[in-house]
Image 1 (cartoon, helix red, strand yellow):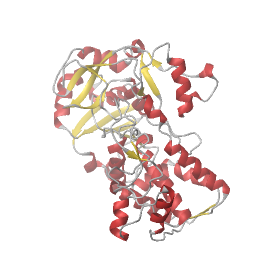
Image 2: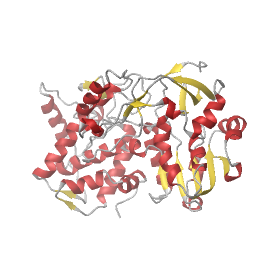
Image 3: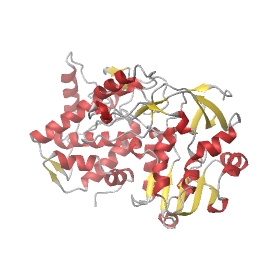
Image 4: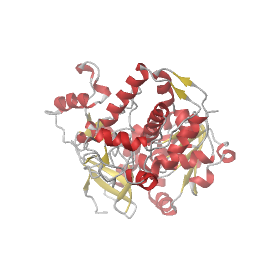
Length: 437
């Protein structure tokens, strides 16, 4: 890492896979592709788009079909080609049934349109000034940022005060004390001001129709901050996005608390500030992170007797017997929603934990692609034909089918579909490979 460099860090943690709802991967021959959809979309620190993604309506992985069913002819009309290719798929049925009516068809059509809308991606890293702020907020409203739906005089500012940020407890007592430090794991970097980044986890669509959105903000000037990095990959840094995605847990924590992931110790520090917390156990996989933390950061932390750090893999500890000894659990062992989705699935397959007891960092970002899989399953149920998906998501798609195949409901309205699509309990159950019952 270049000491003291200005960065727009490549840490994808707090936004996940924004518009990775289009989960169909590249290298699909004869398919229409969209070159402007970024793989790191929900990356609060994404500097540019760099990955080609398929449009949502290109649903078929053609090589898979050709392997199973032989060469599929191409037609000049893409919809005809898609219809013919889908007609070659085997029939699909399930226990749960969705009745085909105008209410449901209209809901699914709106979901499809929302999945196609990637306009918010173009605002990442956009320069914003006091003179351009009003214009950009109007553009964000048009792009689907729902925080600007109300009267213009109620719209939030796009700017975050660095002066206020520098007075926050962790920055004032830890980051400021290490200003100018440069090492192999922890470093001091300059975060560029006046550039839009994703402040928070992906925000669920209030209408529950897959129009999930990003809360974009910019610092009002450059800021010096602390970062944990492994080579050129930033894993965690002291920024307002950390506060937005960690402070809610720290405020509500109580009793005996378990944290998976140490990082720069931000959530540990903020949870220690909560007097309702009696003790904190931290499980960290990387012994080097623990070693450097003990040397440099721990002396700046309060009340050392209230926390213990263990070196272990979270997966070794994620079992019902061990987890039952804690009142609150917070897991942050992923870099972004992209790897977070699969790590959440891994953990939840080992043990189910009550939603009110366990929080996952940027969970709403992690589960965005899973919602797309559920939506695709709705289409499977209506059309009685399976939707092939990219190999990386096939196991999760099978989990979706397993869950709904245990649901005996007959669904005749969009609200029932929305309830399942946006239920955290349902989505956690699917990730864990469980059934409706």
